[in-house]
Image (cartoon, rainbow, N blue to C red):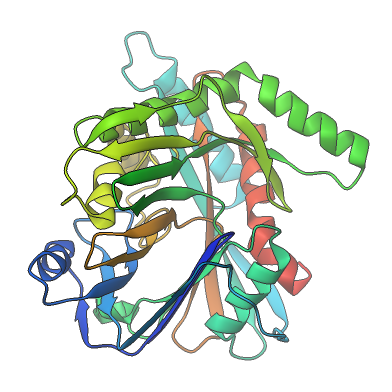
Length: 361
């Protein structure tokens, strides 16, 4: 097992397996009773059924981003899309019918689609993570061995470059940085700057973002003595897209609350599910035809015995098959009442760029 995690001011590399957990309750108990000194790995979109957490044999945390090693990636082609673009547009239109129905309680739902890549040689998860970290100005990236989840996950890896910090806990200090609201970047500097300005002024995207911020503040309130939320979001970017982001800070009421506890209290946020959460999850299950999101839109990170740790949202990622010869990338977008179905398709296409560009696709 090898775990790689990189953020602008922190990185972790862990290797080996002392013990593995495929159920979140067992992992939490091991951390609480001291039988595990640190946990690393991934929690699925459905935290109650998907978990790949490990107590590693070695754990190295540094207060700096990971320094990637030079790598060469194999060639790749897009083998399939699930669903095809026209069917994704149709699903978005069905969601809009629900959102705009008189009396509907649904305010936002996140719908996703996937693409399958096929490689001409086995893709190294760590090499791909290093490529993504090198390409990202903030050095965000991760690679997680999913074997601990058992069964069909043996040998699979989730690798990505997520811009979104779900939660960080350092002592009693808590930091969240939710993202919601997206626009594609442009090569032309003038058009690119305008796209960012338009996003920051977009009533639709500001409303979508507010659902996320309010939900996180509400989830933190019972666990924290203080929660500080800025009045509005800031504009941030990856090489592929512009995002709206809001830094939220809080102070824990009970120092026994761990980073893992916080991650589970917050996940899934409206950024990956919708609002209200239960109704959004039911709508996702219906409109995505029961498709299993596995570890996409889950969370990746670590937590040590003191309770410190951090978790990022598992987006902009590739689920790499055990033989390394194929991978599935998934991207979603938040649908609200005044969304445009074609624009929502374009948003998912822009988000795929993070994992496609390293292969020249």
